[in-house]
Length: 202
Image 1 (cartoon, rainbow, N blue to C red):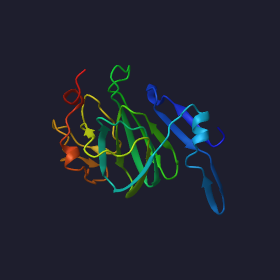
Image 2: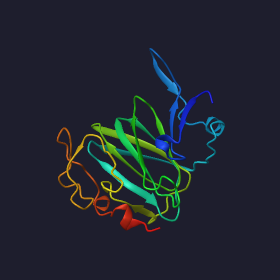
Image 3: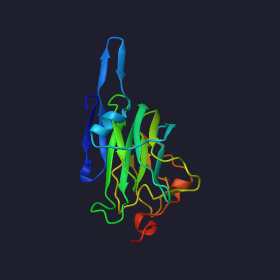
């Protein structure tokens, strides 16, 4: 496992991992392996990824919280430009940490990667002027399979950094800003999700 450092079960949540690659730099720049199946397997992570995705978002954009209903995906996410706060919420039925969240700052400088297993909701908030976000998935995209939950559900109580505003009973971004005054920017769909207790019943 020479090229990566793996912190397992972060936040006390089984399966969540923060991965830090080895970066080799000098006065010309740097080189790193962004993914090695061999290193992952040596770390006890045996996953076959089949699709890579990339998005670009501006400051204040919050995407999430999303999950797949019938075709759950494991995701390996990272930021190649800018800075985001990335969050996973445990939705696994019977899990000791059901409903618990963990967040990690992913930046182009720290080059950390966040491994999110099947059975989690996922979202991120852009804290830089622009952020480019990349992620691997272990299943292909299936149209109409996306579900979601309110990003500001008080029952989950995610501590989004730099966010100011008061919960008004919905996932609406109205009244929310970053500390510098940037308005929070969510899709229409992400402002209509319900909280965890109205989304799942076990």
